[in-house]
Length: 118
Length: 110
Image (cartoon, one colour):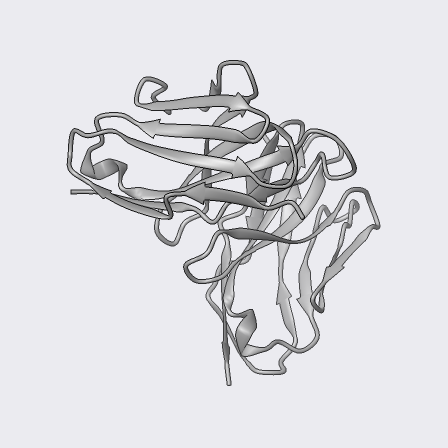
């Protein structure tokens, strides 16, 4: 149980275009989802926390107009990188926390999405 | 603020060697502690966790004990395999967020 999927697993786009990444909890409901960014050989950096039905909370230094987050349902959150530029190239990872039950303090991670902006 | 410090890698071991990856934390209150593993080309997977002092988390031969007195959560395995080669992240959860350590690369040679 506790499977989180991401789509796409990798994407290449041209500079100036927008890219949408989906994060789904497949077998549980997630009131809270998190979006991370991971640079090569580095740890995960939390970008934002999204709660179902409300606006996302962004970490300091993360541009909310560039990284649009929508948490439309208890099983789906999306991250849209708007007007992407090469410096946005990275590995984006989402995680989800269960709405109820003993696993509420545990985040389950998606497999990540590799974004390359040309 | 809350933080996690892991030993720097990479750690290179021969198959069947004993593994220890040190992890210490700084936190107000009593966080839950986690070890996550990231295999090459994959996302993070929860390896084990402990939610209170003296709890021992274990999974796949790995174990770690929540030591409040030393604020530590060291990861151990008695006999590593080549398939254990990965990046290991120690993390704490306090409130809504996970705070990760920098990660430790483990390489196991046959």
